Length: 392
Length: 234
Image (cartoon, rainbow over all chains, first blue to last red; front, side, top):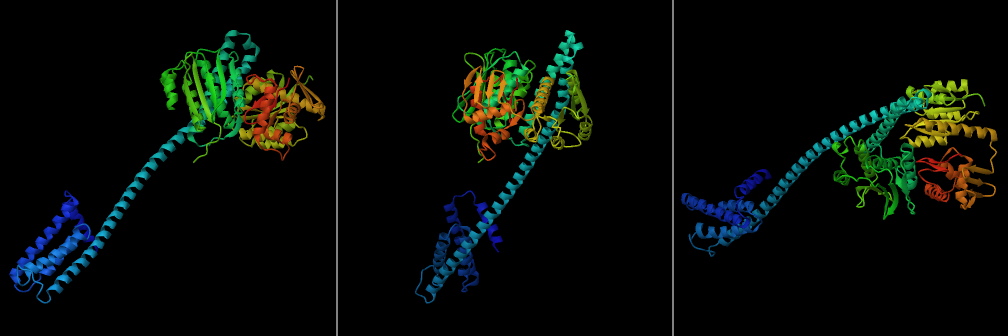
């Protein structure tokens, strides 16, 4: 029922889309009234005394109320129409006359009918507008849904890819771990055997095998940690730990690997007991210390400091070496992985090591920063929240 | 003791098993390799070793099952667990189930040999003393007198609170062995006592400060990260 009306209405709105609201409504009203006048005049000329002008006017008023906004124009048109009929198309022509019997009734009923039509078309129009709006909403929702589905599929695909990559990396790392342990172990056995120990050349080769196997082992452990965190497959297995115990354990590991490298430790008087995955945090500290030992050019003044700053437990590694390049500190600041060319050959493993630190600290909701001390040397610092940050 | 101590190595990775056995043989132990759980158990009963090195990740059996079987036996053969690094809870479980110590892959030969030595010495001591406890423990420069409730460091008395002393006493009694947090909590605060780990950790931090420990070179108490503590032997 409303279908043709809606089409008519929208067609009209489309044709008159250039005009502002009020001129458009006025124009519509005047146009239809004039048309009714012209048609009625023609009818009057052909049919003579039989007067059908009121029906023509009612049709015009119906169109007006349909095509204008609100009731005002329709009702105004019905009053004007009634006056026109009275003036032009009823005896005595071209003069007002309310004295002839029946004329006032005709006029009033004409206005009343027009008003009712206005009300009815108004309602139809409102329904039509509502229907259109609903249709548009549905369409928009449908489009949004389709877009979201497409995005979801893309994200899923990306996640699947990441998972597969992580799984491969993890599997490879796991498989590397056993032979590396065996190589390092076999090298140790060889080193302690008499025939090797007696030949300095063989001994130094075997020592190299052992130290490289150990370095590779450390790298594999880093890779394992990174896959563990980046996939999010395994959530962090946090438990409350004393930070000084974790730092102490890291120092012990460093002492075993670099026996000739003294590292000063400065403990805090505060109790730094906080949730973390201890092995991962230990790895961050080990990586930072190893970074200082390998890349700073200073092995004498490496310092590890633990302190509390507001709600953060902070670990700081300082050296008196050559400092870090702006690229490195910027990459750390932005949380970007280091580019290969930055880590280069001279600083083998620095990229992976720092990248691992960043991932681990991020997974702990902590902060990670790097910079240079104005008095010389690099400062790496990370902080962990003293309290568990609850999601939401 | 002229006879070589016998060590059963239950490890399915041949290369690892190989270097462990070589290292043990080079250090005057007699090693017996077993490459599966079943083989390990049958070799255990036919050779009755002095010590078992047990890998938890075996192809045919769960390492825990073997541990359970061994720990129920009257020989009380000590067991050292070999485990992968990222399986903390597994280690704690194994220790609570009666394993004496653990080594984490990747591990070095010297570390493994040290663990073997310590564990053997500890089990010998337990066998000789037959459970009777000593009254005084001497560890390096530290003297802990249980009866007098007194601790001397370098001959000077150091004062500990009640709980700190209890922890120290427990560590001395089990010197060389890893004690899990739960074990210490239960023995010091009782099974229904405080279940909070924090109080134990804080006590331990105080003990360390009183013993003037250097964290990068601990002389007495070693942290086993995520697991517990161990008193070093002299």
